[in-house]
Amino acid sequence: GAGRGPTQGGQKPPPVATATGAGRGPTALELCPADEFADALGVLSALLPRAVSRGGGLEALTARYVGRFGSAVCPAAHASAGWPRSTRSSRLLLNMAEGTSGTRTVNCWLEGAQLRTAHFPLTATELTPKSATAPGRLHECTRGAGANSCTGQYDLYDYVSDVPVPQVAQLLLQTHSASQLAAVLTLRDPWEWTMSRTNSHSQHNASEDRSFIDDHSFVSVPCGCPWRPADRSEADRIRMTGRSPSRYKVEAYSRLGKETGVLVDTFESPGCAEPTPLTRHTTAALDMLTHNAWTYCVASRRRVPLFAANLAEDMFLMEHVPGSNDTRKLLSKTPSTRPRESESLYRELLSFVGKTSGRKDKRQPEKIRADGSACW
Image 1 (tube, rainbow, N blue to C red):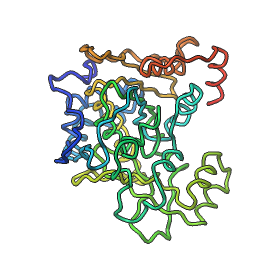
Image 2: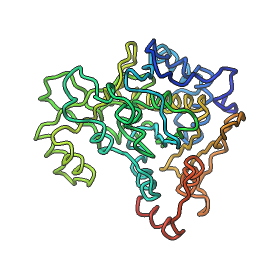
Image 3: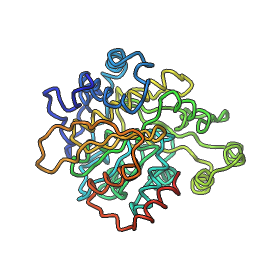
Image 4: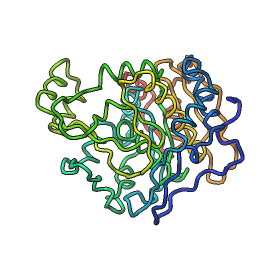
């Protein structure tokens, strides 16, 4: 039930990735057993009013997770495939949620706090060279080591979010210990998210003759397969930037040329689960809710500090930040709703970042308030 934390259940957390040896990757159910998935979903339901009941209830959604994704196989992180153990000495902040959930606002907040952040299109341009778009070719970081490995590419930043981050969240959870990672989960009503994502992001390229998939037309799932990017025609570019173009869309096209898809071919995983197309509206909504609970569960089992928030409802949940020798359970606090000025979601997030990263925000209070307001 929702009263128990996701770390309960008597099972040890999955081991952190080893530096060598491929082997079979873990299944979704091995990473997050059914009872702990239910616990995680119960915790997050406090931040998603009516979403769990609309999805059929806790028991039905848990059974759906087991039947639909339980046997899906995640990639095993290992150095020979470009995913070695991280060597960073500070925590990487990882937003495990899909975009269109407040990721850009949070990115703006943390940029103001002087963190080095990566959000689309930066995650695409830094991690996706155009030469890597040939069919069947894995990203060059899968053949790299150190800073040139896939792990190393993410470790260049303090905070990462938006595509392709949700698709590789579990790989980052494998390659980083709890002292090297802190998680953020920006939540949004799954059905509202699906409609918004479809209306504002989903694109289709009728002229595409290769079997590529548009990165924005799908939702991540537990142990999901890597998505392929869709190349863009000049007509697509004009259509996407010509009607009330936003700054980030113009920036994306100027940096990526005709390719707006984000290459996330950074792993191979036979037995992975196919991502869900947004055209299957209800299924996509339920799978988004499932992925949120699953990533929360996996992060909690690894004792990773986590800050979950629903920006639209002005609600947040923060788990305590464990010390290096802390053996306490990660118990969720009661979510704060419509907090007072001194306890705003923005301030609480900055507090969480300070505790997890060890950074001291040197800005004056007036500057902090102004920077926060500028991001809405």
